[in-house]
Image 1 (cartoon, rainbow, N blue to C red):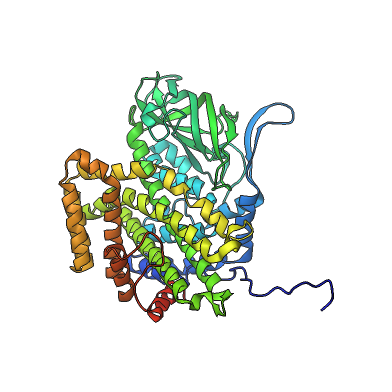
Image 2 (cartoon, rainbow, N blue to C red):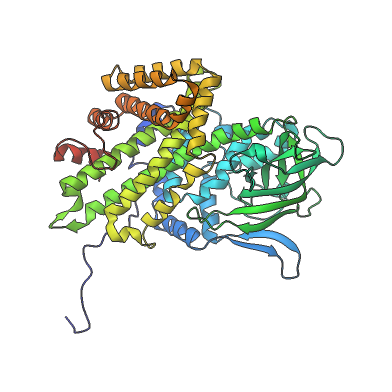
Length: 553
């Protein structure tokens, strides 16, 4: 050893690359097959292998390191309102569109299409989450736009396209388009009924007519989408709320005056551009009937909330895999971390959380597919979707923090994957309605459709096979539903949490390994689980099997 050499590098964990995100996930593969999406397994196998390649991981890092840049004016002074993204962003969007994740169930309406799309979205979200925002909003806009026959005849093929088109052109001149959303304003946030943006008829009026929109939006994502679904009041600031299709360019090719004031400097989700905008008599086309803006928002939000659940389940899965990978390679105190009993407990607990989230998000996607024809599926869609968004999104925050701790100090630096996962985790809890709103929406759904509670709770009982812990949890939920309205509202978070944990327990009992299911039920419903991960009961060898099942070596 020379005098200049101070040490050799060893016991550092290699980057996790060259693995297949799909084939390495037994719970996802089994759910896909069980719920009718097995026809898509070979495509997901190829996609899962592609996402595990080093270049995709490099794209994810670069898209977050090189944030979007706003250019309001050209060199010569013209207003252009362009957002410049790095090439990595467009590469990620190209991957998404190649799998038709922005439209699959609508473009290919066949059995299992919803779970096939959910599985693909889940895989891409593990690689990079910010790029999911425009495809999610596009996806949510399709069922609304399909009701506008004339517009959709032109728009539909561009929404369904599988090739990404990054060009900033009028939407009719492109082969593929994306749709954003503009709902919230400074004074209201989630309270869209406080909006003040106004739309005035240019000529005539009514469905499909042209309006001039004046006002602002506080969160406008993503500003480079080819058009946005925008909520505005009809005629005056106290007029009824309606929904409008607002393209980035007018039909004459001129720029529609939707002026980007600034981009949000966000905690996470940094690859995606969120903006503040002002409408200066921007052209918009009325979508649906006048005064039906709120129902339109609710319809779109239901789909975006499903994607929040899928995206958060994916963050949980990504954090788990990174934690297990680290523990399988890192030595401490003479043994690999994964061989140490307490670390095995933590990893096994995280594995159960991930498996339960995966089963729930796939079951929800399946319910969306069947909701129009099956009252039970409709109950899952209406009630469990907001409850799952509340719970799974919050659990992602806890899981990423715990997984970062598995990495120790190496997890806290930006060069590794854990910091980005941790910063990304809170966004799904906030966007499309924060926790309180989700829990109150659960209660509203039950109030609007009282018979849904019976359908749903009976279904969970059936799936659980009469398990005593699930029976007790169901009895507790039924008792809460008999509370006075004010008391029930005050306990809405407790009800939503209990509903999701009971649903996850029932799904685990019905579809997971029996040992995994019993451990989940005992820890989550049996009050053995502490406020931190790693408090499971059981022997070391049994916990090692839980970890091995979660991500086979």
